[in-house]
Amino acid sequence: MRKFWGLTKRNLLVFFKDKTMIFFSMLTPIIIFVLYLLFLRGTYVSSLEHHAEKLLTLGLVTSGDLSALANGLLLTGIMGSALITIPYNCLVTLVSDREKGVDVDLTVTPASRLQIVLAYFTAAALSAILMTAMILLAGLLILQFSHATYLTAKALLLLFGTMILGAISSTAVFMAILLFIKSSSASAAFLGILSAASGFLIGAYIPISDFSSGIESFCNLFPATGITILIRRFLLTDLLNHVDAGIQGLDQGQFISAIKESFTFESSLFGKVLTLNQSYLYVIIITVAFLFAIALIYPKVYKRK
View 1 (cartoon, rainbow, N blue to C red):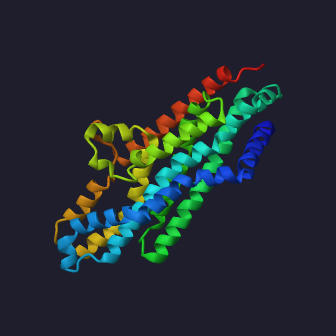
View 2: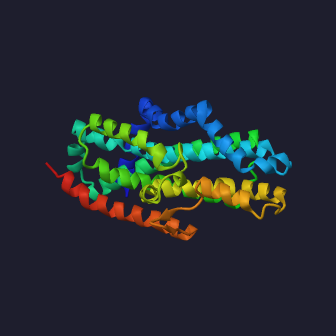
View 3: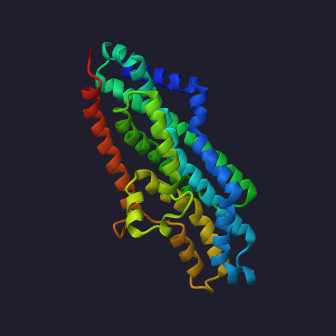
């Protein structure tokens, strides 16, 4: 275990000493925040006002509640993108070591190849968890100071637990991919494609429900999409319950149902809506499958020389 933790510590130090890499890890969430300020917020608020037009007129829903919902949707999009780009960037040490030949030095040490690959994975997962937790905490504090979130202790625990699972699952998926990438330029090119596509895959730019059922199922195949939906669900359900209590059942729950359907509060695969437990189980199965793949791939790709 001493060898494993020593390698893990080394990988953590290598990553956090590179300030440029940390910045680029945060770049996609920053872009989504800027896009939100420029035009996405207006789109979200307009959609919410359309659904609540009569309720606003009757004073049953306030503009503050709609603003809080829009900001919650923003935080969900930021977290979803962060849980894709940050774990990926936390794994660049793996590619960099291979490009510089450090992997050769590591494979001739007494540490087994299983310990080496687990050290890369653990360091990347811990880094991703720390950075995404900071984003989530900052986002929650901003939301709470701007508008009441009505989050319960249970919802907070589920939020952070889901975030941790999302960071681990993304790290496993991307590590299996990066094992086949031999240069930093190739990994940077793939990151560019990933950053451009991630906002659409998780529904940060356009709600997934606006896509066809086939595209929606394709998006939900990715664990990060399911995690984003779960985060949206836990982050906004208490606020929606507060709004629904203010409506006092006069619309038979139609407003809340319309919001949940429009902004995707449940994952669906090939026409089947997944329950909460099924969503978690799917992400866990994918994560375990990729961890097994990593354990099988690494000894073949990183041979002793």
